[in-house]
Length: 330
Image (tube, rainbow, N blue to C red):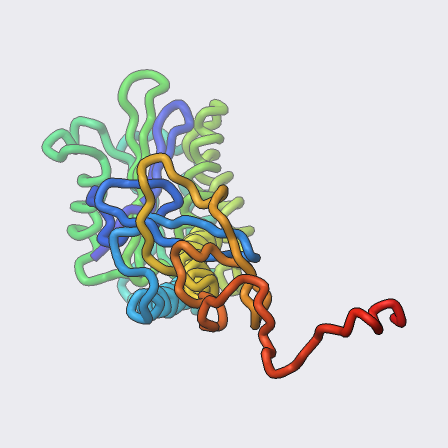
């Protein structure tokens, strides 16, 4: 079915075609969360979560979310590249022809404009019809877009390779236009090209150009657009690329955080109101030499060595003391 290629009106305007999360992990206390202690670069940190963040299930969940985001991002990039790939020239239907139907008698150079429409059709394979109508003719429709849609279906039944541009005026200096293109024309007339045409036509009409001359200017500008080459600088590329990057960052950050939580020996703890871990006593592991808070650990959270007397000799079978008589010899 045909769809709008955009339009414009006097003044230069144009148009183109909470729920709470299941898992909460935060550095700030929130209702329904419990404190978890982990270490990062030897510094004790507190996370508040409403789910167990110490188990493998939590990390696996973040991995699945990351790979899902990666797949969706690659899919977005694929469609973005597909949208800017070169188009194939259309083969017009045999009975279709370009035409200028000036019911308002506002186009003084119909023959010149028709020649330009045929030039554009030879270039893209898409036939164009410019139709001017009185505003009273589409009074039964909600707007000009609906009228243009109905006219397309009526004039080109079963033909999805046409472009219909409807122009109307209402009062002195008040003009409107609407384009309707067949679904098979998206390759040669993407949104980038139709937006360029709409802006050029609106600018010419706002500048006081005759209607026919304004259409000539817009088609001259449109002929400079090459639909048969790659267009990486188009809006879909930037939108899809930015969205893919946003999705990936949103999935990578929780995954890295889950890795830090595991690496930092996270454990669920209890803190009294207003209590912090910064002022709590720390001891050094006798094996891996990393410091931790003994109040919350019976063994080193990094290597698992059981906690013993602080500064005890880790190798009791070896005597590192020296007789007092020989102490001064060293």
